[in-house]
Length: 76
Image (cartoon, rainbow, N blue to C red; front, side, top):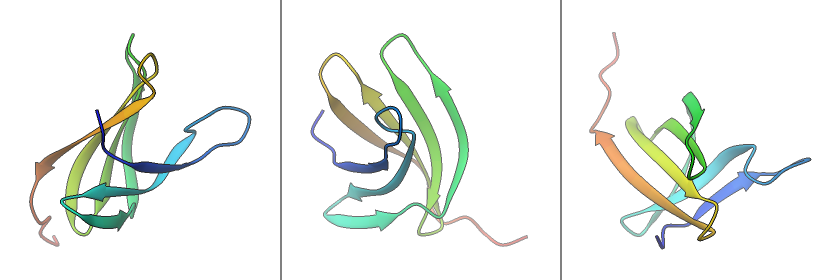
């Protein structure tokens, strides 16, 4: 896991993501669509640049994985 995610951290690390790296670009998070926790760590589904991504934080390895779920969300 080598992806970079910048998060707001208050009383705990990674309360919510602000920006992340994807294919060499820094993308600001436009909207958090969902958040959940797994035994490995925190997860966020976000919209950025009109696309949907899952951001996974592995607490044991202190690393992030970014996965693109869809390309270009069309306006309804």
